[in-house]
Amino acid sequence: MTFLMFLAGLVALVLGAALLVRGASKFALSFGISPLVVGLTVVAFGTSAPEVAVSVGAVLDGRADIAIGAVVGSNIFNVLFILGVSALITPLVVNIQLVRQEVPIMIGASLLLLAMAWDGGLGFVDGAILFGLLVVYTVFLVLQSRKQTREALDEYALEVKPAKPGGWDAGVPMQLLLIVAGLACLVVGSEWLVNAAVSFAKGLGVSDLVIGLTIVAAGTSMPEVATSITAAIKGERDIAVGNVVGSSTFNILGCLGLSGLVSGSTGLVVSPALLNFDIWVMLAVAFACLPVFMSGHSIARWEGGVFLAYYAAYVAYLILAAQQHGALGSFSSAMLFFVIPITALTFLVVMRRGGWGSNRTG
Image (cartoon, rainbow, N blue to C red; front, side, top):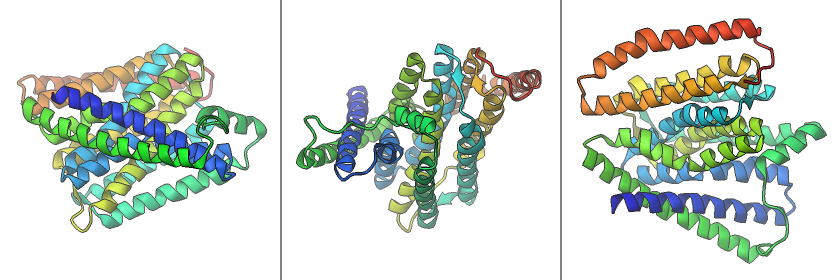
């Protein structure tokens, strides 16, 4: 029953996000808002709606570890797993704007989260700052998009894909109904998913944090998985990358921002395990995007394979640590003294040979 509840919650989250995006997109278009602006706001936020619903719901249920773990785990999952799988399907093109602007913003958001959590908690003021930065970031993207060339605007339109005018849901009443139905599915789905996650944690003998970092993080990232992999299969390779980077930034600013706001005066307690390890992994993954993206402005298949291998290693570490397995020491030593240095050396050699600017396709 717990597994069925988890699946039902996941389906409700994905369905709710889809209904909310469609209804809100059509509603905005009905009032003359441009498709581009709708795409940069409503559609972009909609793909992260499951993370928001689960994080806020977990906070309201007093499960801060699930709320923060889902965001940190989702960001790690986004880069290592989603980009890894997408790059294995086809080498991914990295838009120069991502290298110069979006990735540094993602890194900045990650550093800000680390600084805010350093005292062991995220309070109401922290949440207000994060959410305020999200508003500023969104306004900046909208203003920036209006200055783009026609070619860039076409690329934006291809990427965001807001709903088109007309159709069976052209009327405002139907649009409002879709929005309400989407929100209801998100609320119910998040409740089911959090309850199932807590049951998983108790049944497996692991903490809420581990479940949030793994099962919940992967589950709430399903819209990003679908978007990026579909884009890679269709050959829209820059969209696959942009979706991941944008979602990671929104997870920190939006999900944790709202979670901090609804936490009230008590705030969110950040687990020492999260502060001492997982947030640093998230930060390292964000920084890893820069050399990978800059070494030819693409992600080769072998780099995607390395990303996937590291995600598998990260999950293996969490499981071994949760069970206090005897192999944990040997596993950690192998990663620290062999695998990570060899990988870093390989990336440096590739960047040197590529001159940080050559175009690679695989």
